[in-house]
Image (tube, rainbow, N blue to C red; front, side, top):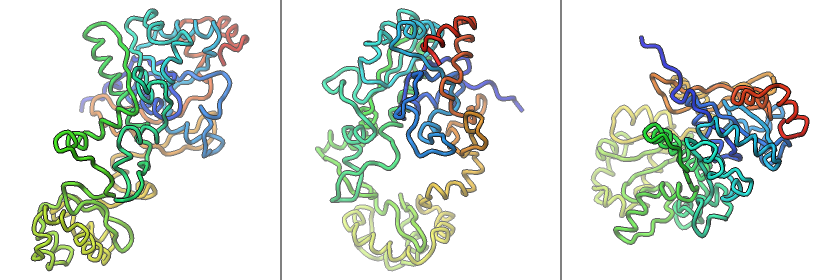
Length: 401
């Protein structure tokens, strides 16, 4: 059997100025793929940057989850010596990432043009709410704003109800995924050209990319898709239905007659309202009422055991987060991993494993989040060959921690 090779991004160095969720989620993907991600923080701790709760053993779980596998250094970016230190580090970096408002790094003298002058091969990846240009570029954005401005929130929620934020932070995380994807593309382009470049990713535009079918329908038919709960605009039935003890998703029914027989509703086979997918869409309320009645007769596990082997539709249990911890498929795929707590604290917390299962260059998940400034000395000595006296000078003057 062929032995796995080192992780795909081994040898890639990332100088990471990102904070909150979107940027750290992006650089976590790079760390999972084997890059050396060095997270740059301020010497003084900041509740908004590192300390959001809830806390476990004094550790912010908000910070813990998207910052696994990274190293941590602290530099005062407002001090001249701190700025000089960043420029020196940038000469040895492959990628710099930041998610401040556009112009912030430029005002510090550490934007793309300044760092490109230090390292023409550098990939400078900037993530912001609305991009580096345009009339909205100076506006702040958080996850909910990105979902709202990018169109996804307008389509999420009950029919006739208010727009609803999607429960996971896809406004942040999808933007982060596009940043990671763009970085990989820029690294490949550098292999071909020898040159770095600027990557500009906006959270709003990442949400627009998710609206691809809705946008093309508006373009073609002047539709303005809006909220319809879990229903599908083109397929029926589609979505979660209550069972005796939970919910089960029924979708993409391809054998209508057999499906009806399996759920004990032969009468629906001959009901003219449900004869075709188009008719089921036209009579969606009556269809869903009948399915609610039928599916409430058994438990989720019972229905899954009856319907799934017949291959008449797509079917899935609606797992809670707690259910995932006991799911045999999750266990078989090793999708929950134990990550140690930092600062030498005893114990671990479970995090999702990387969903990128590479057979030859496996992902690396399991290292803890960085301690605040815990790797400053090591990084400066490894990247810059800095002498201990130089490190202590910077620390004595509060340039680093």
